[in-house]
Length: 315
Image 1 (spheres, rainbow, N blue to C red):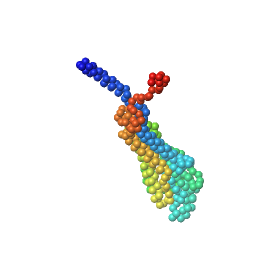
Image 2 (tube, helix red, strand yellow):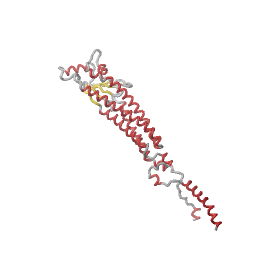
Image 3 (cartoon, one colour):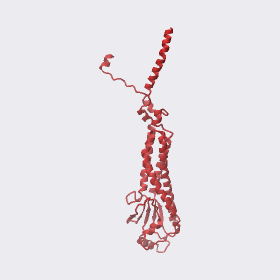
Image 4 (tube, rainbow, N blue to C red):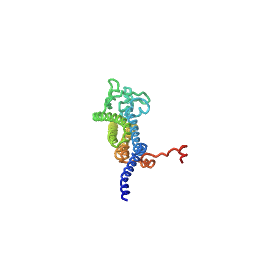
């Protein structure tokens, strides 16, 4: 009896060690297929964020190239239109005659303002587009005066001159922010998918996405405020009949771009704390999607042996 007891006690630790080694062999960790399946939700949200930034970039490009030439869509994308076809108020005697004289002196019927330049167009006639300029800002006094023939002039109210400095400063900031926003959003389209691998990678990506959204949104706010004020000033002038109209298409483009970039940033912020990353699943911090663990068992999958003539014979 004593011999049997000592023999069993001697074999016990060896069997425990053998079972522990078997466990380590059968539980090496999740397979690559499981990791990908467990993090599929995070990947889908990252691709959605990249797609939103792609939309933002497309509409920002339309904002950038608005009103630089006479092509469709581009020629109809502008911030503000100044209608000077009947620049002299009807209350003035012979107003239509004086307005027609102004047109013969070189004054255009309409002036359209874009981000890089402006254009002057006559109703049913030709269009003239100015050369695109970096940090362009629309100076209505200079533009209208330069359109007239040499020696001709038109008296613009002093009220308009009071807003020129503010218009120049805000236009420069708007130009720079739009350009920075479209470049940063374009880069982030390709960096956002890297957030699938780690939540630590999602944090700097979310910060850069926030900067792109911030630049785009602030530029959109500046563009909206600048030309709303300018249109209000022109429409309130009594000495001249200048009808200022806001470009709905331009504002739709830049606010769609701003909204898409903001939503992309919100998604990236969510990925910093939600949705398991591949690093989390590999280290066992999070399990991710439950479907990844229902389809396969953790460890080395056992494949049934293929039967042959020898195996049949043995059976």
